[in-house]
Structure formats: C-alpha cells, structure tokens
Image (cartoon, rainbow, N blue to C red; front, side, top):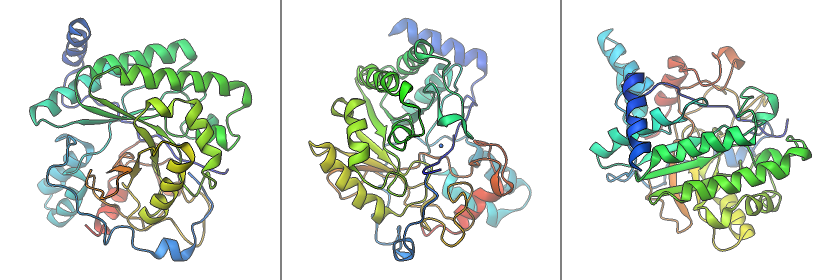
Length: 350
C-alpha cells in the first residue's frame, strides 16, 4: 500500500435522545483511511510542537462536553485515577471533529450546531461517505451509489444550515485517485460528486470547505495531487486538508503545503491535522506505520493562530483516542480506546 488512514467515526448524537435529535432535524429542514513509507529520521526528530504558536484563547471551535474523552475523564475521576483524568483533559477540553453517521448525518449535526451556538462557537465536521470508499480496506463502504451520496450530502448540508461550520471533505478520496488505488472507471464520478459537494456545502452562508489532499509521505510529489484537486473544485472551496489521521511533523507538512498551494495556483489555503503528530511518524519498523503506531503524542492544539498566511488552522480532525483498526491490539476502526488515548495525552508537549 502507498497510503492509508482510517475512519474516525462517531455515531452518537451529543447528549440528545434520537427522537429529539430527529425532531430538531425536521424543524431545521422545514425552517430553512496514510503512507507506510518513512520520513527521514532527521525530519521525524524535529520537534513538531515546540516553537509552534500556542492555541488561541479565542479558538473558534466547539468543544463537546460529552465526548468519549470527557466521559472517560469523569469515569476515571470517580475511580480515583486523578492523574490519568488530568492527563486526558488534554483531549477532553479541546475541539475535535465530528464524523456524522453514514446513514443519517442530520441529527448529529443539528444537535452539535445547537450546542455550539450556545457558546458562540463553530462546528468542525468531516464528510466521509464517498462511494467505493477506502478501496475496500479497513474503512470500506460509503454510499451505495452516486444518487445515494447526493442525498446524504444534501442532508449533511441542510443540517448545517446557517451555523458556522468547517467541513473536511472526503479524506482519502483524491489521494486514492492519485495513487491508483481507486479504479479508473470510478474517477469521473468521484470528481463530479466532489465538485457538486463543494458547491452544495458552499451554498451555506457560513460553511468553509477543505478538500482532502493526503499527506507528504503518501503522495510525495505535490503535482500528482494538484490536478485531482482542480478537477474536484478546489477553486470554489476554501482550500485543502493535509495529514488527516496521520503523524507527519508540522514542519514537513507545512513545507509540502506551501508547494502544493503553489502547484494548485491562486495561493490556495490549507489546514493541517495535528491530532497525533506530536512525536512525528513512527521510525524503525514501519509495517502499517499509519495504524495505531506506538509512542505517538498529541500535536499542536487546535487553533487558527498559525502565523502563516496560507495555513488557516491546526485542527484535530482524527479524533485522538479512537482506534485506526484492529492492528497492534486495537479495537475496530473508530472505536474509543482509552489506553491509547492516555498514551497520546501523557506524551504531549502542550
């Protein structure tokens, strides 16, 4: 494999009973998978966190008070595991992306948007349901066909409505075209669906959209992903996302991001997933280095204070503490794994 990542899904509606969430959705509608190749030891050893800007006190993103991490903190407090609970707050007290359900995304988004509005924050979302997703691997699946995807994406967008939101659009979808994993007969449909998705989401007045572009250890030559981004509508999106669910250092991703921005043209902006890159990528034994690698750490906390004109934000897109898959003793992809989460938090530099 030339590149891999896995789902970080969470089907739970945030503290809202399903019936109430469905009612909220109805009211709203009526009213309105990363590279196994290695980064050089020198790049991996470069500290990707120290020297980066601290998270802004005015971070615009909503923090879910009932996330898996938050509930784990409360459970450990009750059990007297005070040190572990304190460490895990490095995840629980920070905003992470919501990956809405593949069958009915609306209730989760409506509930999150309502909760975020109470604190005047923006929601961070991932749209991850493209047909033929993940080349049949750990996160295989997706909508059954193009029409089903259009319907799902339409519900996704309508649930956002007028709420401020940032959407990471279809992790892996374009890199899997660039690396040859997605068969050629699906390319035209995928470009069309992504282009339509950009327009559907951007029709919402306060929604930002970033098309996923993999990571520098996967599609090593920016020119190979630049043309797929153009065909998918990057000119109408807010930019592209890098390092989703991966571990590449800030320094290497920023260097790549600048090159890709130039290759795309127009000074394209981008965001970086820093949820687990605080220790850089795994060195030494690189087998499935993308999948629950040991010894990793949380990276730069989410912030829009990047001090880089084209880098819009450091984001936690992969939900830190959720498994990449059943490798290295992990549970199924997207399942909360408290022991792994605690290790990420304990090794974090900030």
